[in-house]
Amino acid sequence: MEKILNYVNGAWQEPRSGMYLDNYDPSIGSVYSLIPDSDANDVSEAVTAALDAFPDWSAMPVERRSAVLQRIADLIDRDIDLLARAESIDNGKPLSLARSLDIPRASANLRFFATGALHFSSEAHTTGTDAVNYTLRTPLGVAGCISPWNLPLYLFTWKVAPALAAGCTVVAKPSELSPMTAYIFSKLCIEAGLPRGVLNIVHGIGPKAGQAIVEHPEVIAISFTGGTVTGKKIATTAAPMFKKLSLELGGKNPNIIFADCDLERALDISLQSSFSNQGEICLCGSRILVEKSLYNQFVEAFVAGTKKLKVGDPLEEGTDIGALISENHLNKVSGYIDLARQEGGQILTGGKRVIVKGRCAHGYFLEPTVIVGLDSECRTNQEEIFGPVVTIMPFDTEMDAVHFSNSTSYGLSASLWTENLKRAHRVSAQIKSGIIWVNCWLFRDLRTPFGGMKQSGLGREGGWEALKFFTDVKNVCVRL
Ligand code: NDP
Image (cartoon, rainbow, N blue to C red; front, side, top):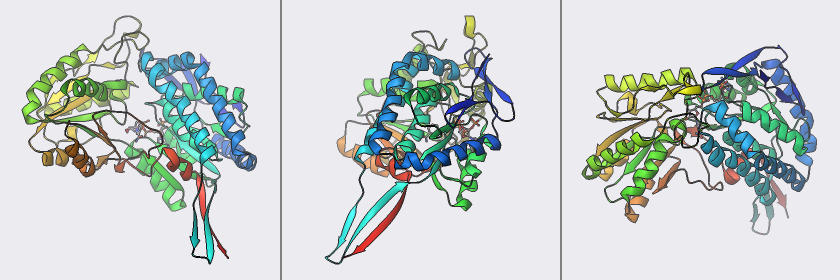
């Protein structure tokens, strides 16, 4: 059975304890590889390697740093089929999605930050004729990057690329549930000639390996994407150490459909925003709010569209919905469907586990599920489910739509569908979410700041924000 290895100081190594964890293929429900069960000793070695590599990497001309990162991006593009297949097996997502979204976005992340760093500038302020102040930005040091399982290589590179481009060295931990593409990535880093110690990847579980990264005194910034509960734990550890923190957390995103929308397009994209990647995208719209006059028509068409989605073997062409990440997660999501029933919800379609014939008979598949009849305050409409489950609720007025949208503790993203330009701007300004999509979903320009409000996160990633995050800032005031 294949053993994933840690990548420390430019080479693969076994965990110091010799202990390994099982890595499951969720589409067949069986272990298919082993991953290091790393602990604080492995993290400590990785941090030492990153510290040693920092002086040279941070002093390297940015053109050379950029070139190495772009070489890694080229290798990702070269190996796109291998990576997409590995990610589909590791994660349960349809191969077609990994091929069209996850892996291309991973190489785009590298290219974006590698070239962005070439054009990074800072500010100067003249104080009349008396002084000139300039802002000096220098790489921070060793950064810790911790990423989740749902978009494994996409989110791993979203953190690691700006850190490396800014001149930091990194100790990173991918999720223990989907570590394979980060392991393959380490092979590409070696092939691309990334100097040793610049990036170190320590595999293992969050409370052990992840926590050791957060606690390590020499790791001075933490960039984390994951659940809100974990984010709180990380903030509790890191805040008293005055570490720089970027937290990208959960969401319970509204998808608002006004009666004047382009209905065909709103339906088509809403099916994607509800069920893409089995609903396991932090930006999925899990609460659909529909203006009353359109409600019945929308619900009928949306349910019909949902019934057409094919749940099946992620490696097969034509599969829309693959396996959920783990048996635990399947049980958690199914538990929320039971909760919705207890809260008075009506399941219009879905709600049951799917047994896929053939090699996937023991995989973790769930029908895409549509629930109506719940109010906005119930737990089903307040808590992040993170699976192929959506609720649909009617609303009367624009004010009600805004009120329902803002009624959870989350504020990650929102979509709204209307042909009324003034309303689009008005509602966008009132919704408390870090990103609002008008008549679209998941359309991303990597230059824009990205992040959540309220319990969806702290700080902004993307564009200059991410490069700035990984730098120390000082003002130099020169008296003339
Ligand atoms: P988790 O919070 O469970 O885990 C995220 C990462 O943190 C994993 O690598 C995990 O390791 C690690 N971790 C867990 N505990 C600790 C700890 N104490 N110290 C350090 N690291 C730790 O999230 P999931 O992996 O379950 O991902 C799903 C969540 O991520 C959802 O809530 C989703 O909304 C959110 N998310 C947010 C995004 C955003 O941009 N805002 C984007 C994508 C997802 P391990 O897996 O080994 O436990």
